[in-house]
Image (cartoon, rainbow, N blue to C red):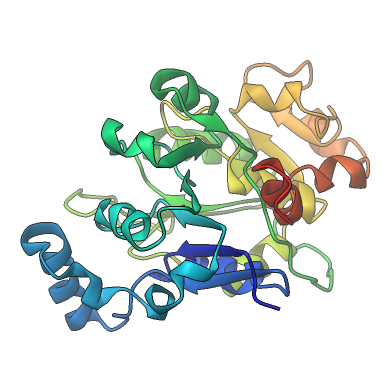
Length: 303
């Protein structure tokens, strides 16, 4: 029996690959968006897709050969050109076509594409600003063996204008007695202090999971303008870790408990007091709401 749902997403880095592999199951096909994987072919591919455009489908992965069999096709946002949506609609005009903003909107799908393509996002502000449909952010946890934590607070992520806020928080945590491990990935073209808090490129995701496993608490500082649930928050709750965040909206979710989640500038406790609080297990039913299966279901009974 052929599958009715196809998900097309990027495999451009280790984190994308983690999700791509984790999303594969018996009822849904999940495929890489493009064929080029090595650096030079990928550069040529990007020039072709962005500038030349004519004949762009030569770079599309083998999913292009079987488009007609699917009733629903979901395309993740990390693509080089929106032309791919037009291509899919031309090949299978009867399918339900969904474009999923897995990140906050940097470039909006053209309005004329809405005639044949639904546009969804996890970010409430983007949904309101651009009239998008809303679904949850989701996470696919890996089974990990828990060990005695080496760190009290852990952060890894790209700068995105957060460097000073992260440095200040790291100093505050150290002064409160936390053993910290912060790794701020440097933005290109920006000069940084020569210290241990910044790194030049992101770690492999399996290494990040090892740090998560070895930490009591995950730190999440949302980038300016972001209102949706970050993956970093979901990593904390799915792996049973405490969380320090500036994301106030998490207080309105079922996952919030003052023993587990510290909202910067909105907690009745000090950081020292929060560290001493015994964590409370997260409700499995709440976690299920942010699962891959729930995300699929929320598009309209896709399973």
